[in-house]
Length: 145
Image (tube, rainbow, N blue to C red):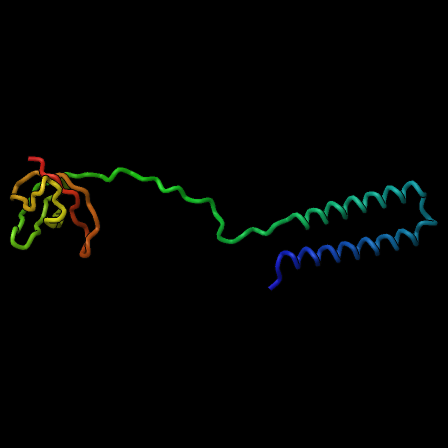
């Protein structure tokens, strides 16, 4: 696998070779060209070669996988209200009817109301929706009435 250092070395060798060939060619036609024009062309060639070489030597390949970090924005959990449809004290779970009419599972461990471990049918409650083993469920349940 060719690394960017290998590419730089190859570019340097090619550039050096072209400079030598250019110098030899300039030497061959030296007798035919005016000395000032020759000096101008040689200077321009040297500047071009140095510029290209500097660009190749300082160029860094992009590192894969580096992207700006995504900033996680924390939002306050959305709380909803609903009414208890039914709650089985012996089994420790029941269902809440959400304001949109859907049923939502609730477990007694989700009740955060001063040690209460039961809900009564028809009670108004406030809660957050979390993900349980079998789907959405109520969490952080607070009894409103």
